[in-house]
Image (cartoon, rainbow, N blue to C red; front, side, top):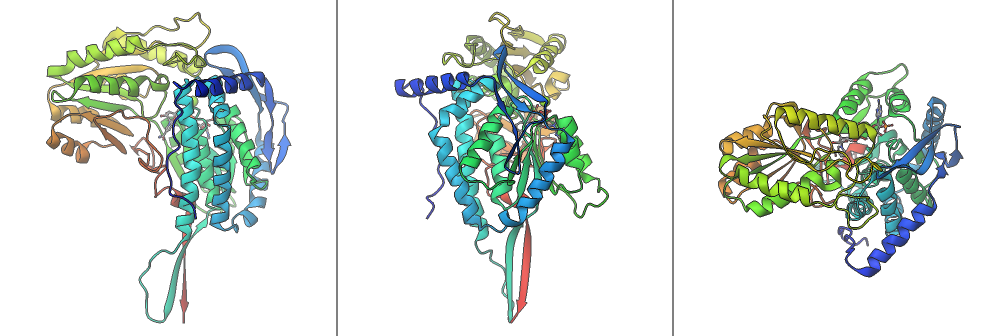
Length: 517
Ligand code: NAP
Ligand code: MG
């Protein structure tokens, strides 16, 4: 009997023993800096002569490690290996596949801090952010294992006299899993686990900015007993092997999480039926957000300000769920703005490895320049209140101060485009209907929040606020697997609801068998 799912507890770093364990893990990861990780194709370690270098965003010349870079030849081999592994793996019983995920979860639990420490260095995640990422990865393994068992059970159908009707879910085939760098373990692990526990085999193409943590995860799956070829680890450029795999006639499905730009490109490319292709490709694409928190005059303003600050600046604002718009009703606008500005200014920024740091550096030079360009736009469209400056800690990493821009017009670029950094726009609303209209005035629809004590207003938002994940009187980040299935509307994606009961069906097709007795 599998015990009921429960979320993995977060680590309490105020306890000396936990701090000590995390320090030891950071040291261990540091000792391995520069390690070279090969591709894994059909269980074979493969190098290509070319490498992807992975650097520490907080110490930009520090090489965390290198991962072999695949080109089309390796991609073709990975497709061969995955299809070769498919007939056997797809016939494993779902509970047997689930057991492998449970074993992987247990192994990950035992070396939890090593996974977190890898993300501290490779992604610039602070200790609690990295710990949350690892806990979520464990949750996905545990939750999808249970879901696979549940979906293998009977599915009630109307009985017809003299006939037996049976519905079962069967796997699709070989899929390509393409995760982003911002939850480089949780999302990578969740998408991969879902793809394989349902009987598919997969090619995992990690984000090029965070390939080491993905390589570590693949190593762990092997340690848990994953047969060769079930997950093929294929680091490489999205534009090159990504496009090649997405458009390949032997690819059956694509599971993507990332930007709107790449997601819509993949969606279009996958829709074209290629010579020799025998199916329509399934595409799950989870994309960006322009997430808003509304605060009205009845709200607990201190709690609202704290919720906005946490949602806007956690992991430097690099979450698809991050608050990037604070929409505040006129009577309390100045008050909330002042509180958030003070809290943002008080955030301690520094290297992610330092447990005192509350926010660290953004992921790389490209993001750094992009975010600063939005600060410029903010200066023109609105009024810079706090932050907006790069660095502060000696040009060692891609640091940008937590930034607040006030009086942003709701149609301006700052209010419409995903920035994906520590930049928060304040927008003034005349009244509550106006606030809701501003919140919905976006092509995205991922997360949203309302701080209010007015029951009618909350109920109005419940139906009218057009987002996949809506939060009342709390932060809008940190959805929990099993409790808060996650996915967005409109240009935020296909609303796949990761970590929920509808997710695994996206990796399967239903087969109905009818027998006349
Ligand atoms: P990205 O630039 O779209 O990249 C995501 C993945 O797609 C990477 O592995 C990337 O590979 C790959 N890729 C790039 N071009 C490709 C192509 N032509 N064909 C196939 N794959 C391609 O996104 P990101 O910068 O990593 O992540 C940030 C974005 O993800 C934000 O927009 C954020 O909102 C979104 N996000 C959404 C969710 C959600 O659940 N809705 C969750 C997290 C993040 P390379 O790294 O090699 O370019
Ligand atoms: Mg990118």
